[in-house]
Length: 197
Image 1 (cartoon, one colour):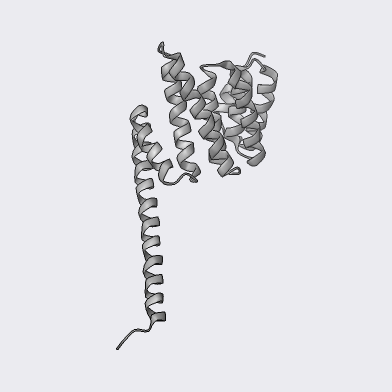
Image 2 (cartoon, rainbow, N blue to C red; image 1 turned 45 degrees about the vertical axis):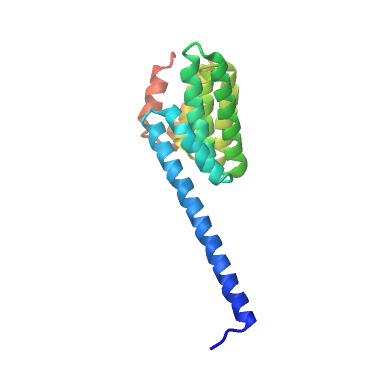
């Protein structure tokens, strides 16, 4: 049985499509493996060793916001560690990287609450280097609360930041709101009790 030219074309088309799908799956798998290894290293405290795997994952899948978010968190930790040593120039580079990657993760997925929470964490790390980041963290917390107005932990963290900035009465009101949302929130109750009357 001899194949017609249209059948050859169809076979080639199917093979090409299968090859593309296999390549895409392999790329996803490699990126996911690199990210998983980077996350494992970063969570174990080996943040500088995690960087190459984060970069590899991002190179393979640049539109994956989770990879950018992980790199942002790691870069912020590195910036803080370098700042505590006399390497302030390097700390500034990692600070910029953390901000850029966090912004990119939010740009790629603007309503993902986890990326907003990560942005807040990044800004808290960076505020330990430069207190000028506290207002940005405050704005990020308020934006996250607008996405999840019943998340008691966000309100609690807002109260912590307000107290850190010296806004004791605002922190008190925020923690009352936290307890309205979650009456058994022990940390919020303890924070309220610790405030001067």
